[in-house]
Amino acid sequence: MMIERRHRLLGPAYRLFYDEPFHPVRGAGVWLYDAAGTAYLDAYNNVASVGHCHPRVVAALAAQSARLNTHTRYLDDTVLDYAERLLATLPDALQTMMFTCTGSEANDLALRIARMVTGGAGFVVTENAYHGVTSALAEMSPSLGLPLGAHVRSIAAPGKSAEFASDLQAAIDDLSAAGIRFAGFLCDSIFASDGIFSDPVGLLQSAIETTHRNGGLYIADEVQSGFGRTGSHMWGFARHGVVPDMVSMGKPMGDGHPLAGLAMRPDLSARFGAETRYFNTFGGNPVSSAVGIAVLDVMADEELQQNAAEVGAYLKAGLQSLAGQHETITDIRGAGLYLGVELRDGAAAVVNQMRAKRVLLSAAGPQGNVLKIRPPLVFSRENADQLLSVLDECLGG
Ligand code: PMP
Image 1 (tube, protein in one colour):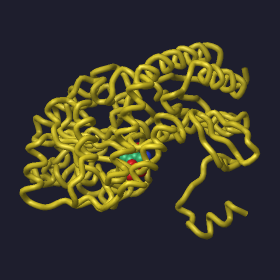
Image 2: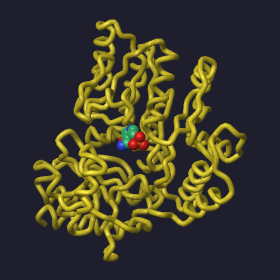
Image 3: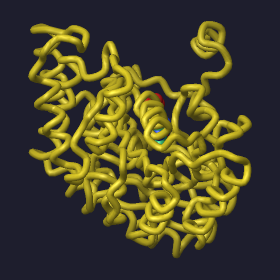
Image 4: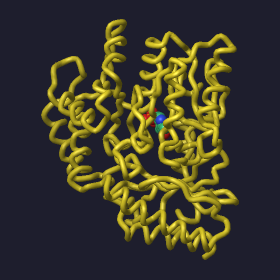
């Protein structure tokens, strides 16, 4: 009856995971618990990036919300300290941070800035990308299944086409043939909803060169790939050795608290600020900023990026060995603790069976045939072993 109630109250656009929807009532670290106290291994939630309900994040949130929370047009040190901390993790060329509450707002702001600075209106995305909920981004998110905007072109993700940069050039030429000037390339650095493509390292280099050669801005969507997720680097684009013009971030940024932002070159923020003003009521408020700082502290103190690299490599090796035993596995992709297991016969059945065996994950890719493994960064080798043995059983081991 809870499902019926949800459908009635929230409407049908909301989708639930799993044939038997899951109802957690408590979370801690990599675990989610149902009302009976049964523990489920969370191999999916990058939002609870430093672990569900991390005590230091909870304490920072509680302390700041007991002290002060307000809108963002008063002076406040917290947001400045946080901006400094974030910018220190980014390339030197990116020197301004603007804060939002969602990844969608961050991407939307990036589109506005790109349009203003380039004078163009045309954007390129990948063919099954997801970039957000605003009307501008829905028109640029092919995975939603709606028509793309007349000013939007899509190209195959790099794993699917060896010609990533020439596809991008062809899309830009097509825009220009339609009389639309190119404004930018919005690109998820791990190609999450395209099916997770991470290799070869360097694959973004020719795309960023092509973007710049054509007068556009390169916007790295780090909502999925940011915050140490890919193990070797703090940011997904950095793995590929590129320096974007703007970087949007969100999801893991607040360990569940709604916190997101956009980093950019200072000339871009200067131009935007000269032409208009920006006010986001909640984005970067004192509580959000305190939470964001606590997440960065926990990441550093618990060496979570390193853990993502180590446990991610261990898990990937385990998956590769499963691939040797199960012909249904056709490819293993990904970096750090963002891994994709492509299956020949679709992933839904396996996802549901794993849920029945108390391991939570999901599927990605245009055919939904790629198991998406993206746990909190506190995932251990022991957790990886549990996932591997349950997956082995579910694949018919
Ligand atoms: N970009 C990417 C790559 C995403 O995966 C998402 C969320 N799934 C967004 C942007 C939008 O973020 P939000 O849901 O916080 O608006």
